[in-house]
Image (cartoon, rainbow, N blue to C red; front, side, top):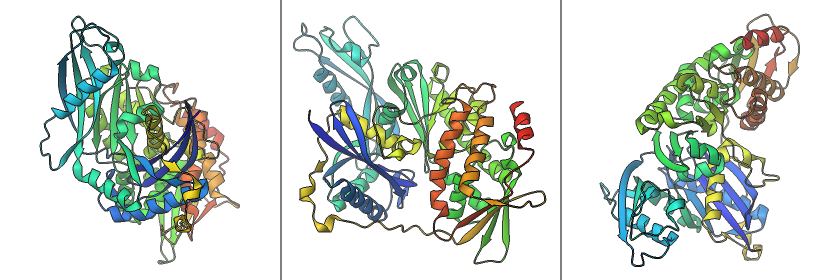
Length: 509
C-alpha cells in the first residue's frame, strides 16, 4: 500500500506548530510534532512575515534533520479573524436527467456559487471556503450532500455558506513559504477542519458549539446535522488575559504569561488550597519583592474570561442555533487549560461542557504533544489532507544537503526573576519541587471544580479526576519554559494539614 507523508503548519498568535505524518491507506501516524513561540502574528494573521520566517525555518530544519527527509510542500491554516459570511445559491439543469447525481455535479454547483460570490473589495478580500448547507431536487427539499448524490432529477439546486477573509493575510502566508522554498499544497479554513479532529459524529449531528480559545482570538463553530452551520470570532483571547495580568500586577508580559500558565484559574471561590497561596516575585533588577495572591490572579482571569464567554454566547444566540445544541459545548485551544474554565462556561451558559482533545484517529508514539488541545488545529489539517488525497509532501533523505541542517536555538529571553510561593500564615519548614507540588495542586483543584454547578460534572470530558490528570500533564509541559534560564521557582510550605477538611467543604458547592 502506498505511503504518503503529509506536513501541516499551524500559524498561531502564540505558537507555530509543525506536524509531519505518514499516511498508509486509512492509517495515520504522527512522526513529528513540535511547537515554538511565534512572533509577527496577531489575531491569527501574519503582520510581519520576516519575524515568522526565522522560527519556522528552524522548525522545518529540525524536522528534516530528525526524520531524514526534505519537506517540499505543506498544508497550512488560514486566519480565523475578520471573517465575513455570505449565503449563496446555485442551480443547474442536468444534461442527463435519467442518470444518478454524481459528486462531480455537486462540486460544480459549489464552484458556481463561489464564482457568483460578490466580494466587497476584490483587491482586499478573498474567498476562504464554502460549505454546502442543503440541496433540492425535483421532488425533495432540504437534502444533505450525502443524500442528494445518487438521486435522479432534471434539476438540482444547492445552498452554500461562504467564508470571506483578508487577501493581505493570505499574501503574507505566501511570502513566508516562498522564502522557505516550500510549496503550499492547500490552505485550509481551520474551523472547517477542526471538527474532524475533536468532535464525534453524534455531536455534530445533534448540534454542538465548538469554542476555540486561542491566544489571539476566540471563535465559535456550530455544527448541526453533521454540517458546519455557523462561524464567528472575536479578536480577544489568551494574550488579552496575559495583558490584564501584566497591567494589574505591573509585571512584564513574559512573566505574566508564565504566571497565567502556571497558576491560571477561573472562579476564585471554587479554589481551596491554591487560593491561600501568594506568588512572591524577586527580581535581580530590584530589591523590592512583589506579591500576587493566587486568588487575586484568579479574579483578574475570571473577569476577562467572563467577558469573552458572554461575547461568544451572544454570537451563539445570534446564529439561531442556541436551542439546538443537544451536545452542548466543546472547548479547545490553549485557554482550555485554565483551571475551572469549563465550569465557568457551564455556569454562564447552562450547556454541558467538555474539553476537546484530538480523537484517537491516529497514532503518535513519541509525539505526546500531538494529543493535546493545542495540537487540534494541526491534526484537523492532517486528517483533511488525508481525505483530500494530498500528495506526499516530502522527498527522500538522499536529496538533503549539508546546508539543510539547521541548529535550533532558544531565542526567547526569560526574565531574570525569582518567584516564591508562601503561605499567608506563619512559615513552616521544608521546600519541595514546584513542578511536582503544583501539578498536584492543579489536579486537586480540577477534581473539586469537576463537580460543576450542576453537581455531577457530566459535561466534562471524563471524570473530574481524569480532567485533573490532563491538567497536571499539560501544566507541567506548559510550565517547562518557565523554569528555563535564570527564572527559578521555590515553593515553600505547600503542605496544608487542613487540606482534607478544605476538600470536604469544597464538595458541598
